[in-house]
Image (cartoon, rainbow, N blue to C red; front, side):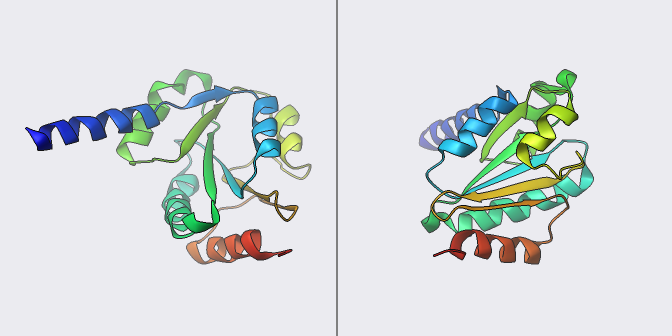
Length: 160
């Protein structure tokens, strides 16, 4: 009985985490601006194979740097028809426990430059911000595990 209850609790927690929150670019900008800890904001989609390949690296790296209060926010750029069910199913299948947002914007010419003026709109793309040091760097590419480790080292230690 105890195992059944524990299993049900874990399933309920996974379902709660699987519900991506819908945000506008202005809300995302404010979330980034108001953060008091280092952030990795990864832009991805359920149909993007390079995005899917790198997500486990991000999850592993954030766990390894938990002591630094590093947070990963996964921002889905999936289409309106995919919100929320396709994204939720993806999150559950991939056992994603990090915060997931769905960007409720369709005009890349509007939202991309608000994240980085050089962003062409391709994904995966990642913004790294450390409000403690003023560090801000944008990557418009898939990151290998080694590249990510180096990038996180810079994020956490540049300016300290």
